[in-house]
View 1 (tube, rainbow, N blue to C red):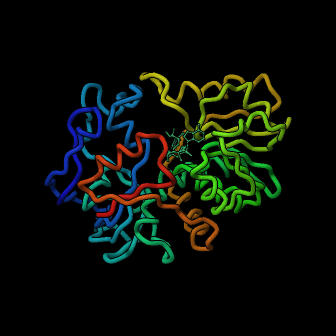
View 2 (spheres, protein in one colour):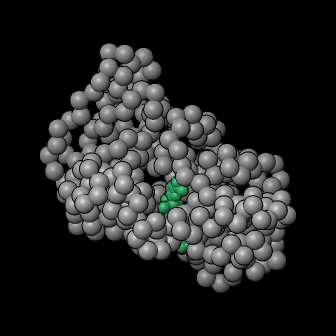
Length: 323
Ligand SMILES: NC(=O)c1ccc[n+]([C@@H]2O[C@H](COP(=O)([O-])OP(=O)(O)OC[C@H]3O[C@@H](n4cnc5c(N)ncnc54)[C@H](OP(=O)(O)O)[C@@H]3O)[C@@H](O)[C@H]2O)c1
């Protein structure tokens, strides 16, 4: 099969389209013929080996796993002896390391789910990492409920476009923050109000919110607290890459450090791989409450180009790889 491989950390130039063996499946595993994948900052961090903290598990000097990519959608090609939940021909989506390839294997009880019939493979491939991150931030951490005033800082990116829609689905009154070129898109996915950060500072509008989902990061805790109601929840999801050791984590970590001393709940979150989250997202997508937003599609050989675009920090919604 064709697959993206890399043997050293670096820029997208380290990524090569190579011939590789089709993964062998164990008794409990499903072999998926990948139709589409999508790129995430997670892949970028493992490609670069920065922040250095990723090297703890990923390989100190060079990548321990030479395959890249997490998000995928495709057709089941074969199943192991003990697999009961899937059969060849099923259309599925989910997450598995090495998804920038023609085939991946996934344990049947991990991040794999039947693809909602109303989604294309490209749309389904956009869901796993960004969708579960947004779900865990909005539902589990912030517990958004009917009528909550929710601000999503970074509303136009991969995570942000899911967060806006999930918060709306839970009954939130949502304000999205993005740049001028994305204002219309943020409104079209359901944001009730949109703040253009190139014109207005969202921390100085005088408005207060019950929930802040901070995907873009980069602001001081004191600035963020200006917009929080007394019992609000702020969830730090991401942020600018400040330095090479812990990258965006340095900004996010300030939230829980401050939390014990203030009336609001200030949280930094790390996405966990929870198969049930895909079940919840499938329901939201089948009902039309959440629709993945695709910016551009690239071919498998153009993964380096897709990564270069992601590296700008200004990709709109999700970037998919069509295989
Ligand atoms: N905590 C976790 O476990 C976890 C999981 C997944 C992702 N993340 C992190 O979450 C962050 C976002 O991920 P993503 O997949 O959404 O990335 P992405 O798709 O690359 O996000 C790009 C978006 O960020 C927006 N943006 C850039 N600067 C901004 C600013 N100053 N204010 C508001 N918006 C701004 C851009 O909008 P404009 O072009 O309009 O500026 C663009 O739409 C990353 O830092 C990622 O590492 C964390």
